[in-house]
Length: 109
Image 1 (cartoon, rainbow, N blue to C red):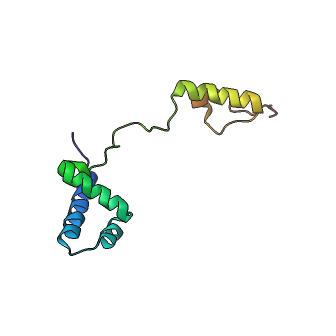
Image 2 (cartoon, rainbow, N blue to C red):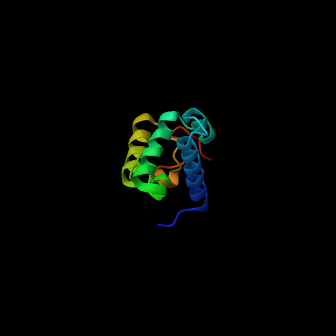
Image 3 (tube, rainbow, N blue to C red):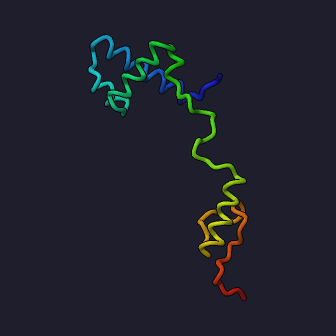
């Protein structure tokens, strides 16, 4: 799998911080501060590094769709249902929602 240059740089930075913490030149708190994460997260990264090597430091979520995104078929039905029940738009663009852009009480000339 190919990784973006940013992901490679991030993994190298995490690896360097973990090595410095394990060598004793940094504390866990200092290492976590450098990376902008909690100390517990840094310990989890260390465990992944020891288990999987450098590949364990890459973000495993990259390239995968969001878990929170609803399928378009379901969101279209939801938009239509909400709009018909409330008489209001959901804020979703009409092109993706399947409803018109005019509100029910709007006066058109």
